[in-house]
Image (cartoon, rainbow, N blue to C red; front, top):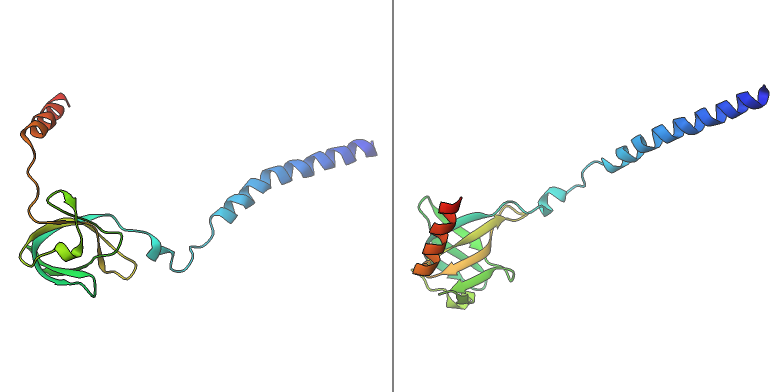
Amino acid sequence: MQKSLSYLLAISLLTAIGLIAPIGSRAAEKKAPIEGAEKEKPSSRTPFHGKLNAVDKSAMTITLDGKERKRTILVTSQTRIAKAGKPATLEDALVGDEIGGQLVKNGDGKEEAVSLRLGPKPEEKPADKKEKTAKNAAK
C-alpha cells in the first residue's frame, strides 16, 4: 500500500510539473521590452514629392517645397537614388527639379529617404498601360 501511495504521489508530482513548465516558459518569453527597442523599429514608408529647394551635400540632406510645407529629408548611403530611370547620386540633384520617393522616420524622429527619384516621374509605356488595364479588368 505504501508503494502504491508513493507511486501515485510521484505521478501526481510529474504531472504537475508537466502542466506548470509551459506556463513558466511563456512568461519568460513575455519579457519587458528593452529600453530603446522602439527606436530600432522602422516605421512604415511614406511617399513624398515636390520641388527640390536645396541640396546640402555635406549634411546629406535635401529640402523640398511640398504642397503642405517645406521639409528636410536625410539621404543616407542606403537611399536608392534614380534619375530618368537610371541609378544616380546626390551630386546629380539640381535645385528646381521635381523629386519624389519614399521615406521613413528614423529613431531620432528625422525623415530619412529610402528611395529618391530626381526629375519628373517617368511616363509609362503604352504597352505597360494596356497590361495594367487588362489585369485590373480581370480582377
